[in-house]
Image 1 (cartoon, rainbow, N blue to C red):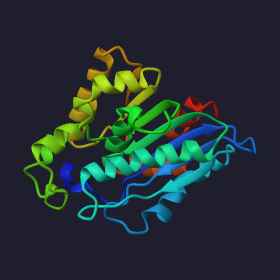
Image 2: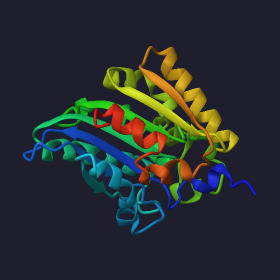
Image 3: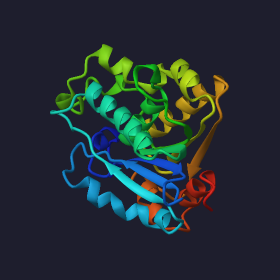
Length: 244
């Protein structure tokens, strides 16, 4: 039986990976992982398996947590993710570039980072690339579902936290960013629709975006296979970072 697209938002198998290419004091590039832990208390630790192929290429991995619903509402979660990215940039003083990668609800958070008005913060992160995998970019469809019960989003909250509604700000903040929108061949129709429509919207705005339809994958193993150094998306991520 096909799992509902709504059943995975939130879910224990979601991640946001903030990939940081940096010249640190040890001259090693870094990857910070922004963790989606909305319904998994130890998600930060369990996501570490994906870091192995990246560490093998000389990448430092940093995991970041944030408050989950119902303790954390959507505005708070987005704010915490944005501030965590700022914190990573401040911590690595020799940083040269930042790459984001998020899966499912995590892709939503990564896209929200891309759509940030950084004038409200103390620093502008040098985001060079983003991998948005099987994501949710329009929150309005979940307002009337059980998923919204712990989130308690109003229409106003959903709109201001929907990346699809914030493309003008993304263009201002992340115009030089290389964006890859990936979707699983066997993703549910709604995930595929949201990915395709978001990609087309970004493309129509003149942004550097490409669509990756990953064959022989579903909503879960499209990200779980990052543990494999020979996996297509793992290679693409490392290539984009200049670490292939």
